[in-house]
Length: 363
Ligand SMILES: C[S@@+](CC[C@H](N)C(=O)[O-])C[C@H]1O[C@@H](n2cnc3c(N)ncnc32)[C@H](O)[C@@H]1O
Image (cartoon, rainbow, N blue to C red; front, side, top):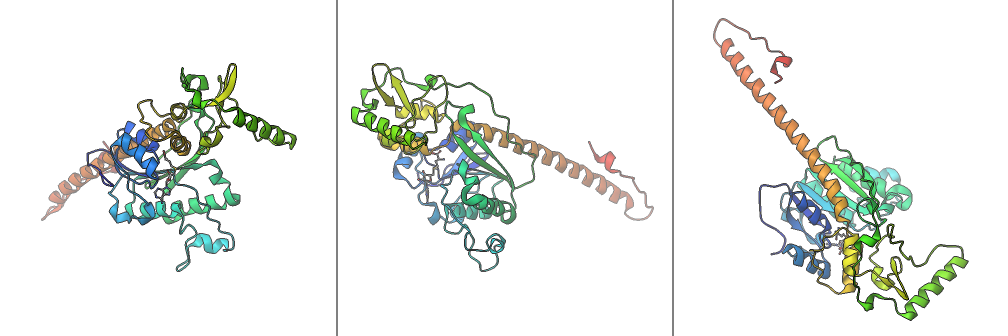
């Protein structure tokens, strides 16, 4: 099955730049239903299909918004292609004058905007690297916020969240949440847990993950050279009682950012399964690609329990709003009945008025 999925009476979401489905795991846990996903990397798509029984659609830039099913929630961990507004006067760039090329045109963010603008989901959740906020002296983020707020008219909230509150990994990512209606959303307080890398490690690990003598020597020399130059580049042996550095998509190269010390042996890198745990994936999640591909996929992914935490609060907020809407529509219904009654009394002759005050209409 490609693209569209089945219908049910649940909140529906779409999973853009789906990777291996981190957003999907979290939103499904919250009882939502995925109706569309897009991921163009065939290996990530293979992992996605193995786990969700659904092969995502491909290149999002080639998919018309009209081909995407209606949905309540849009999720996107879009790759950040820098779009500089240098050389264009700020007024022009942000004013989106008629005939002027939009500053985000040609970037994947633009594709997210084009889909939101046509499909108008109740809410969207975007995720990106922390540096999105400071990129190009903050101008990139300014264009993003202005586009979402002023052009799409969404109510925007954002927060940098460190995953160390959910998994034993220091990983800061920015979450941008936009609501179509003006709701009382607040990012929830983060849990303060003391998580330890030791808790996600395998008991028995294949020798292939131990660094070869050559690689270990190279990493030590490299670190020494940079230490002399006064900068901190180098490998990272993890304190097993604490959290690891950020797992990057480049981890497959030498694994140097997160190494596990071993008694009487060279250190080792994490196994793909340990990486999965570091990203908050359950052990039932199927890893179906080579180690290299799996490292890239987990390094690119979102930390599932972080999305889960944010999504839970978003859904609570939508529910509160739904209740408020239902209450106010029942108020309108009640008002209408009273007005009809009032009209009956007033028709033909003796005008018998019923005094209706707003207070009296409230239930
Ligand atoms: C930062 S990763 C998002 C990972 C995802 N959130 C997850 O949980 O695994 C961005 C993803 O966008 C995909 N991508 C980039 N350009 C794309 C395009 N034009 N169409 C569809 N997917 C694309 C990449 O292959 C990559 O997997």
